Every structure is written in structure tokens, then in C-alpha cells.
Image 1: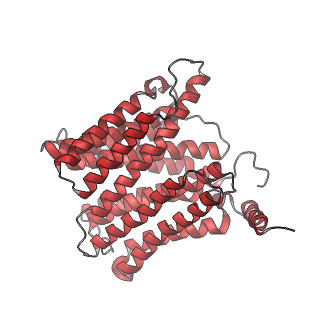
Image 2: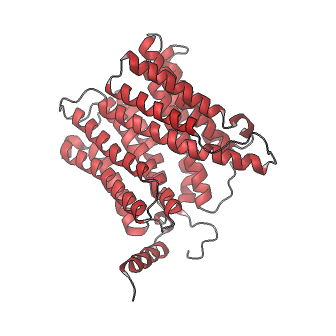
Image 3: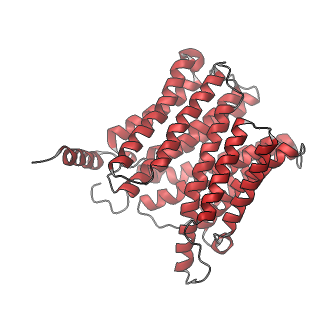
Length: 405
């Protein structure tokens, strides 16, 4: 007698084999959609900032830009990463076919609803946006719980992301929410994810690469109590900053967290991986995390350190770089291609790093502010556009050697 579990497994297997390549893994639609939305949302924001267009949203232009880059763009990549990682964690077949298309469609509907919320209403836009994260958390939670996997805390982070998005919507609707609370909470959660996941994959990938080069000494090890402590102080510091962005206690905690994360990074042998761009970019991307924490802490004590520089070190720097590092590597790996960075991939890493550097340095007045902002957008946005050009076609193609194509 066939059990219900076996029936569900067979149904999922049938969806996999009958689905187009683009719907055979969560990374495909969500990496493509996230990268495309990064380019579109950035372009719309810059045009609106220049007075060339009035965005048809109920949100203030800056609030829309902040929300869509954090909850729209980053949210999509989190979904793609999570739906791709869960089968590796649990041994279960990935979400594919119509269910994956429906989830990606919900994300896209939320983006359009928020953009055109002046016409369709802020309530519906918020419901679709929050609903996406709740559905994602439910889908991911079901898979993790079914396999009794230990990664359920990451699912809880997605659930908290829904509440952060809801808080940001409430602020936009004039509900009396503290300014920036939802956005700060969202940044906190992404910083936690980078600290957690980066702390797993960076030393692991670096150790594997160094071992292949024949190195046997001073290889990065598994996370220790020091890593747990660094993550804990980072969570505490970001929580304090979210609750009281200008309090000196938050500033001290941020400085301590930045120092701890910098010490953490120094133990992973990044300088020795410079010959492999796929590994080295992970170190570069993670380096933005302690830089952002230290700048954010310093901005509370020193007026000459702009708060916007710190926030963009965490967002344009850490989030942007780590996202491209993970998207390029996992796209190659999960489509059966060699884990090797070609010239175009290296160009992607150079562009996103240069764009982040210009965006972070612009408020310091080292260069012409307007010119720095423009070239920052060209570099950072150009990195995601180049990702679409180089990796977009791969996301639509079958995995190399796939017998079911």
C-alpha cells in the first residue's frame, strides 16, 4: 500500500521532470528576479531622484527605494537561497513546477502592487508583500520540520522578516511607528544571516580550496565558541541600534561587534585564496560586515562619520557583494558547471565592489558627491545587469547532464 508521504514524493518528482528548467529550483526564478529587480528599482529611484518621473506609490520615494532594495531585492535572493539550500539540508526533493511559479508570482505581484499602490491601495500592497514572506516561511518550515533538520532558526529569521516588512509598511501608512524601525529590523536580520551563513560557508569553501592546492597547515577550522560569541554580540548590537539608533550603548556594542567580526574574518585565510575569485569574493563581501558595524558605531560618537555611509557599507557593500558571490557560485554549482570564475564573473565582482566603495565614500566628501553617486550606481547596478547577461541564460537552461531534459 502506497502511503500519503510516498504519493507526495512521487507528485513532486513528476513536477520536477515535467517542469521547464527555469522552475526546477528556487534559485532560478528568484536569483533572476532579484537581480532584475535590483536593476529596475535602482534605475527608477535614480530617475525619480532626478525629477524625471513621479513614482506611482503611496510611499515616499526614499521609503520605497529603501523598502524595495531590502525586502524586494534582498528578499528574493533569500528565498532563492533558502529554497535551494533546504533540499541539501533535508535530502528532500526541491520545490518545483507550479508551486514554485506561484511563489515567485506572489513575490512579483507584491513588487508591482507596492509600486502602483497609489492606484490599488496601500493595504493590498502590504498584504501581498507580507504574505509572500509568510508563505515562504510556511513552505520552508514544512520542509525543515518534516526532515527534523536543525536549520529551523533560519526559517524563523524569514518569519521575522515578514514582521519587519509589516512594520515598514505601517510606518509608510502613518501608523505612528518609530522612523526607520522596520528597515533597521530588516537590516538586522540580513546581517544575522550573513554572519551565520557566511561563517559556515566561507571557512569551509576556503579550506577545501586550500586543501586542493596542497596546503596542509593553518587551514580554516569549524566554527568555535568565539564565532558563536561574535554572532551573539552582533545580534545584541544590531538589536540595540534598532531600538535606539543614537544611544551610546548601542555605539559601544557596534564597535565591539565590528571588532569581533573582523577578528573572525582574519582567521579564515582570505589572503591565501586571492587566486580563486569565487572564494576570494566571499571574504571581500564579508569584510563589509565589520566595516559597516564599525562605521555605524563610530557614527554615534563622531559627527564626521556619516550614518548613511555605515548603512550602505552593510547594504550596498555586505549584502550586495555577498549576494553576487553566492548567486554566481551556486548557479554554476547547481547547473552542473565548473566552479570557475571567467572574466565576466570577475568583472561582476569588481563592479559591485567599486560601486559599494563609491557609495560608502560619497558622504565623506572625498570626491564630488553627485559624481560619486552616479558612478556608484553605474558600478553597483552594472554588476547585477552583467549577472543577468552572463548568468540569466544559464538559469533558463537545463542542468548539464540532466537525463530528464
